[in-house]
Length: 216
Ligand SMILES: Nc1nc2c(ncn2[C@@H]2O[C@H](COP(=O)(O)OP(=O)(O)OP(=O)(O)O)[C@@H](O)[C@H]2O)c(=O)[nH]1
Ligand SMILES: [Mg+2]
Image (spheres, helix red, strand yellow):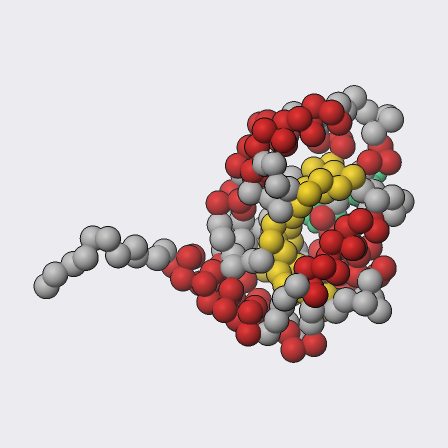
């Protein structure tokens, strides 16, 4: 038997990511993978987005947490369909898990699927889930050194949301340093300063989201 060593053997995760990409394309669905540290505000951003865009964009959410379905409950309370994945210890979501969750969402009635990854600035960025875009959240209380310390995650973002901007005057956070560090890592990412608590800056985020849906 002859083995062609130039043939790339896809890993189980990559195969599932390809399946997800095909499934999302067939259903004309945009899909955004949301990555951040625990507590940066991912679920709060999603809940506010769902409420504010309820007449314009039909959103479904895949929630990833090590344990509990608390976040899926928050999403349902905000008015969107949600499927919770409990990873039972794993620090990131995998493409096969997302494949399973996509089958459970009412995809024919949706325009956009968010995947809220497990709170972690390291592992999630290494796993392709088949998403059409990556959104990384950095919140003010985490500190202004995070892009430099976790470069892989910030380098692969399409959008970087700097959340909890309402707290900037209370904490030592050098916004210019963050912007300069991100510029070194990623010149194409859109950077938006927002507060999911007060609504500040959210319109820019909504405008970008609406563009994602119409460009499918
Ligand atoms: N001041 C302020 N607080 C916020 C903002 N966004 C979120 N929070 C608070 O931050 C805390 C964490 O928010 P979550 O939305 O649960 O964060 P998360 O990233 O989903 O957390 P995990 O799912 O555990 O990773 C909550 O107490 C929120 O009310 C904001 O813009 N400003
Ligand atoms: Mg959450």
